[in-house]
Image 1 (tube, rainbow, N blue to C red):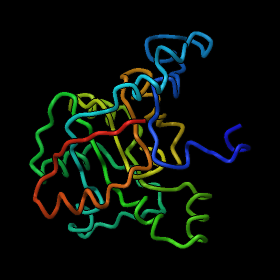
Image 2 (cartoon, rainbow, N blue to C red; image 1 turned 180 degrees about the vertical axis):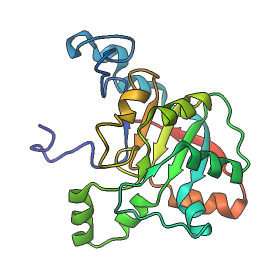
Image 3 (tube, helix red, strand yellow; image 1 turned 90 degrees about the vertical axis):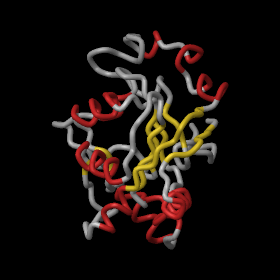
Length: 209
């Protein structure tokens, strides 16, 4: 009853725990088939909160890359950011990923929301149409092959919205089967500006749910 109590935890910067979603074929992370099998003590959000999510952050600034390449990233349309898009940005920034990196992907969505008037915010919230990572298997494989531990984005859902049922869910590919931590609604604009000014794209990352 979070909405009735006036506190909605999915309305601001947040982390999805391993208990957030299940995979239809394989259950929750670790093979627990039903919600009744999943003890919050085992894979709940408090596991992340106890130690925090800390590591080397890597920024892929999709918004800046598209802008500099005269490509439009319309924040009102469900553009699927492909694994090839991520590879292109990583190559342009000369990124070499290391095991356990925390990938931060900036689209500019949160920055636009914060700088909009209330009517525009209401429209964005109701539409729930925005760019995000493609939900397909190729994307999941790319993120896994890079050795990442967590994905952070400045949109409401990490993956593109609305999604395509024929493609499937990136949440289900990443959380219950691969054990990724997913962070949504992060404000990455100031970080992106600092990275651009200092000509670097890696940094110390620390977040405590």
